Image (cartoon, rainbow, N blue to C red):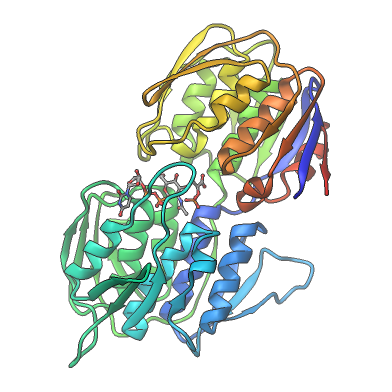
Length: 424
Ligand SMILES: CC(=O)N[C@H]1[C@@H](OP(=O)(O)OP(=O)(O)OC[C@H]2O[C@@H](n3ccc(=O)[nH]c3=O)[C@H](O)[C@@H]2O)O[C@H](CO)[C@@H](O)[C@@H]1O
Ligand SMILES: C=C(OP(=O)(O)O)C(=O)O
């Protein structure tokens, strides 16, 4: 198992180029199942979850081509032939986003068998709203032997448009239902839809493929189903979480970094908090120049759905608070168990206590390097940030979690002057 070893204390300096968003790329890759024509994608991040999704799509019958061998971000996918409508437990257990094949497969093939994802480190994460929505669209769904078995009925076999109000805001739930609705007969209204930019990016691609969607970016999506979608070209939006992670690294370790090829307009809530923490930022159309002198100030925050502060940035900003001047309260409202990084940050000398869904951090002047263990994707990022700010050597174990969602993070940090290396 790979590890990251770093020696902290060096301020970061230089430029970092942000990759395409994992959470936009994953549903977008699944959208290619909705058409028998090729879909051309650019700015796809080269990370483990994308490789897993491509493997799953290939098992289903999708052909995947990289037109330029040296550029893994440019892909052509063709789902001309679907040979299987199944996502096995083996695939789904390594990546929950595999559930995103359910809506497109059901819409196009009229049946799908997808393993139930089950819980994971950050929470139970049920998919009941995906199932409820597809049932409202006329699908018959059984849960058998750990699998969601879904089908639509003759004579037309098409899903039917429906008005769907989800019990809570769900990102992949909205995406699954949105994709399914594009090929349904009639009009689907998704109320309480997730407004995350990644949902909007998927919707933009679907429109390019011939889907009729209005309300993109709002919490009410109206989809008029069409009989067929066609091929399209699309560039995945930049990853706001990767950009935010690098901004937090500068806030914690100090220095001056230009975060390039990002979308500052998708980072408002994160930038407000980092500004409060003392990070100086100059913002351009697709870049943020961030600089930090001295210690950050502690900032309290709570996670919530977009456009509020993202849960996927909670651990990274907590690492900043760990070395900040003062104390902060961090409330996690999306996932019930997303504080696994706290005990590892404390192993580095942080002073953070948990009370229910709130973490109370007393900033310390210096963290000291130690061996720590990554428990999930963003927890790993927070440990790397803390390790960069700590005195001495830190080793982060189990970075396969980090590799799921970051495109060569240690390489990008090395270019910024960090003393970091991967140990195989
Ligand atoms: C691949 C992807 O895009 N992952 C993101 C997506 O995950 P994901 O789409 O899985 O997260 P959701 O938005 O669905 O989850 C939000 C909350 O709703 C609950 N829920 C969700 C669906 C459902 O059917 N029933 C239910 O109870 C979840 O357990 C959670 O408490 O959004 C999360 C919240 O922004 C992010 O942290 C993840 O990075
Ligand atoms: C929780 C995350 O991803 P996933 O939903 O794929 O587990 C994340 O990106 O932080």
